[in-house]
Length: 108
Image (cartoon, rainbow, N blue to C red; front, side):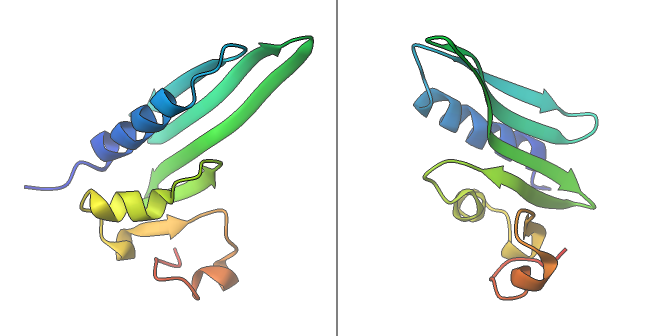
C-alpha cells in the first residue's frame, strides 16, 4: 500500500494547530489537496496590531514533500520520517539547493 503524503501532512498540521492556540488570533489550516499545498497560518488582531504569519507550509512536488516554512519548535522533517516518509522524499525547501546537499534529506 502506498503512503498517502497528503494525509500524513494533514496529520502533522492538525497536530501543530492544536498546539498553536491563541486567545488573540485565529489559527487556520489550509489544505489544497488538488494542487498539493498545505499551510498552517495565524491571522487576526492581537490587541491593536494585525497579525498574519505562516507557521507551516508544505507542498508535494514531483512526489516529494517540500518543507517550505517551519516556524514551530518541532523538526517537521523528523516527524515525517517517524510517520513513514523516507528522507530521500523530503526536501528542506527553505534551505538553498547548495545547503541541502549537506543534509540527510533530498536536494530536490
